[in-house]
Length: 476
Image 1: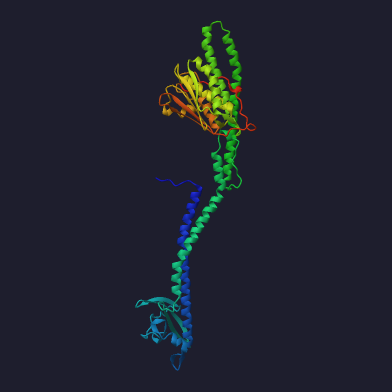
Image 2: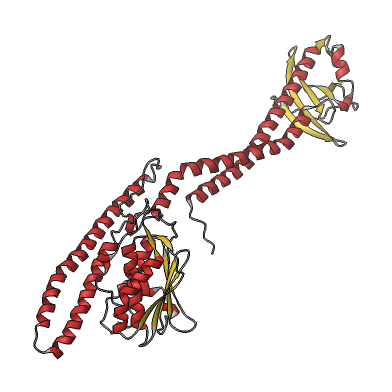
């Protein structure tokens, strides 16, 4: 079953099309009816005028009827069936005078119906319009019949009516089409504030929770919906801010107890018992750090004038992660273009995203393997590992919060790659993953290219404050 589109514009225009279609039928029918009624009234009025002339010419003198028609009327009625014709009948229905060749009448009077009777009569392919009228002259009753041959060339009323009916369709059709186009324009203009509000609503997200739909110019029927949506957005923003503040507060409150706990564990005399406890404390510290990062990223507002050189950034991240890789008996290498690759972005946050990707790649690269950073123009950097790769069904899931391939391992909170995705998304870029033909996974970060900043223009930002505790890998 095909469902009709739910567009308001489509519905209104469809109703207007249906209304215009009905109008396109009703208007000609109404015009035809009105025109026919006008023609009929005109024809009957003409018959009545002729009947009045004949009645004035009828005289009853010396016990007999006499008809004294003027010469012009005698000429008018001299053609018999060709044009106008008359017949005069007495009260018994006997024909007294007739201009018809047969000397008879077309209709017989009804004594019980003194009102005028109009009729149409066909004879030898011709159509006659006639009327039978009742008159009293000299105290005696007469019936006067007048007919007109509608096929006569002198009868132009029916010809005009026929020509008009043929042309009215070509007149009505363009008018209706113009009305339809005008309706479409009017409806679309009336719904313009609604369309703009829908586009504005489609752009709402976690970064634009403070934006509200505008009610300026909104139809009164839609304005209550806009107010309700804005009220709902107010409640969502308040709840979102409370949740964000709670996460940050909890993470801050946990940092001090964890530091105290670490010092106490380090003071234990039993090193073998302290070692697993310190590992658990380190894992908890990483989770707290990730929670703080997530809370910070939810409020990030990037300056569009910020620039970063991907090649220089890759060198710094590789140098920063090299000691950690060597401690795992693995290697980090930087390849690709050696020239600067400028992109729009905040260097400290991009450093954090690449650090998380490299740490994740180190965790899944076997001992003796190499994690490779490949810088490519115009604004792309790839992180390649030599691990088991990523199943196709997991490539979208792995950038979600709290996702881990093996949840039985309690070595992470599943936030590292979601932090990467959030940072890249805030920069207007994209991050994706695919398997390498030779084995392993390839993470690709695509950013918006930017021109090289001038000496007096944008200054590349540092990131020394971002080199904190690394994030726990998300891929097991």
